[in-house]
Amino acid sequence: MSEPGFISSHRYGKDLVRVARVVRDKVDGKDVHHVIEYTVRALIDGDIDVSYTKADNSVVVPTDTVKNTVNYFAKTSPHVLDPAAFALHLGAHFVTRYDHIHTAWIDLTTHKWSRIAVDGEEHKWSFVRDGDEKTTVSVVVGGEVGHLTADLKLGLKDLLVLKTSGSAFDKFWRDELTTLAEVKDRLFSTSVTATASIPLPPNTPLTPDGVGEIAKALDFPTISAAIKKDTLEVFATDESASVQATLYNTAQRVLISCPAVKDIHYSLPNKHYIPVNLSAFKLDNGLGYEGGAEVFYPAPDPSGLIEATVSRK
Image 1 (cartoon, helix red, strand yellow):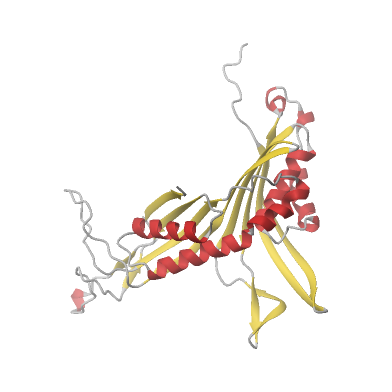
Image 2 (cartoon, helix red, strand yellow):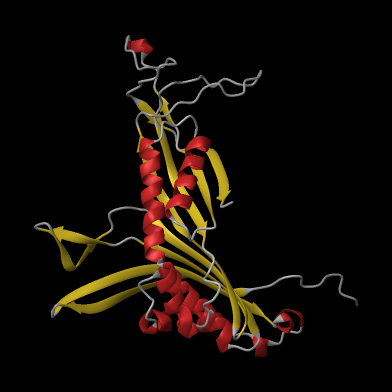
């Protein structure tokens, strides 16, 4: 019996690998600890068709081995505290360790731990999760030994922000199905997801041992910090005509402050806070065009969703 279909793409690996690493350091002879916590997805692909079509497992690197590799590198990689460099190190390992594996997808989510301040000084080994935002890295490593390439993106997600003024929405398209009222001053809230593309230095080969040189040249932590700083500052200070306009202004700021960024994508769900009508109680809650409401209903859904990618010219 002939087979009507063929495999046009495939990949596999391990998802939702949770790993935390404590780096025990000494500064001026005193103990200082660093901690980082990841959720990792590591997928691989290559000459593995027969595992699907012929039930031949001889080409399958077990997904348990993929998980073990993440844990092994969490202990041994010199880049474990730098998410982007750690992802590059993992990806470069998979495509150089196995001759039949040609592509690796590494996605890291970093869970926030910040040092606790005691008497104005950061404690040497105590931390607090003081926010839900997470840094993200997505890297695709491909090619052959000596000729590896990487598509690297880093960013953040779940960065929840809110401003109580400095945001309007008016002069929008109206038709017979439009009921939304225009407003000069509204509450604006969103949960920011940002993803920036970072080309690797053209003259620095990507190898497992060469990741450090790439990380030094690009300084990934500084880029990540700048993206968050720019996002927060523009959100706070922009006299927003719309989510779209604020998104565009934020992306332009990132391209100015981060020369290594090729493009940046923002996804901004509009977290709606709806002014409550208190007229039945003879109370004015600022429901008119001028805005100024003080009592809101935080609506969980539906939400507007505004997305765009701004690319360097």
